[in-house]
Amino acid sequence: IGASQGLGLQFLKIFKMNKKINLYATYNKNKISINDTNISKIKVDIKKDLKKIYEIIAKNHTLKIFYFVSEKIYFEKKLDNQIKKNYKHLFLEFPIKIINRILNNKKIQFFYPSTINIEIDKNSYYSKIKLLAEKKIHKLKKKSKAKILTHRFPAIYSKQSINLFNREPISLSR
Image (cartoon, rainbow, N blue to C red; front, side):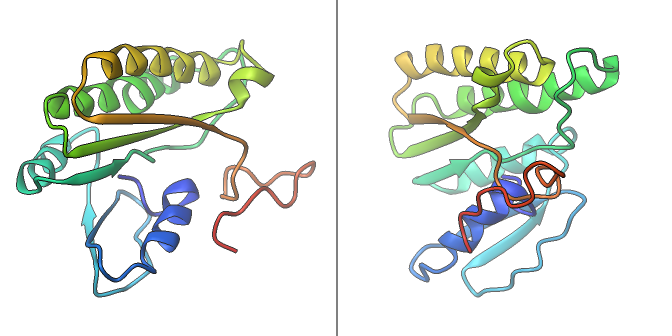
């Protein structure tokens, strides 16, 4: 989910090499430019189309879900209320809803990427919401039959991570 840029695109580039697996690659505003026979591209606005994700889950008995939904990330401590609301939906509420949907299915796996920014700047709103998501996901993991994984990543190459101080963030697929 969220395969058009950043981590989602990096993972898609890696997974597409395995022609034996079928991939569902979702995007919202930024179309996915990769074309391959094993990739089904689906436009999903997670804020409006969560039902599309549920349909994919229902159609597949075994599935690995990678939750890479994101928007522009701001590291400031004080953010506009609309940005905070969006972060809460995207990074906390929607992944929790999806996990609750798969809790009893031991053939489904869910991966949630987090950030090392939690350790660097624990007071930014982005760090706080990601840490809260980690904690809630960890609680769900304890009672889940589905395999649930989280990992804290450093800045990964994307439009959001290029800046004057770090001109070449890590790339997973170069």
